[in-house]
Length: 52
Image (cartoon, rainbow, N blue to C red; front, side, top):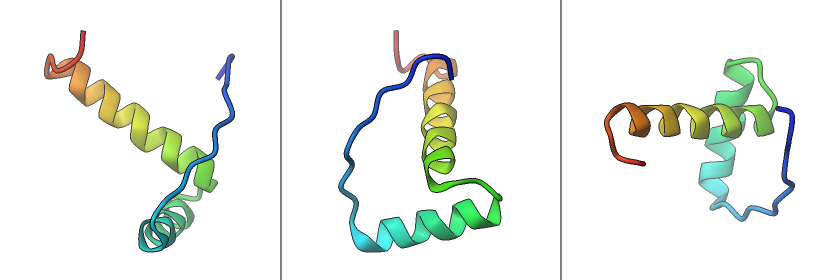
């Protein structure tokens, strides 16, 4: 990532706990896991023509 923005994100506790487990399983940081999932979703949406 060449350009980044820092944000504060509030998550339900159960979602946070699930993401932590998923990140550990994938050997990624929590931040990297969230970015990975968002990028994957964005790419899928773009492929399906859901976004401009």
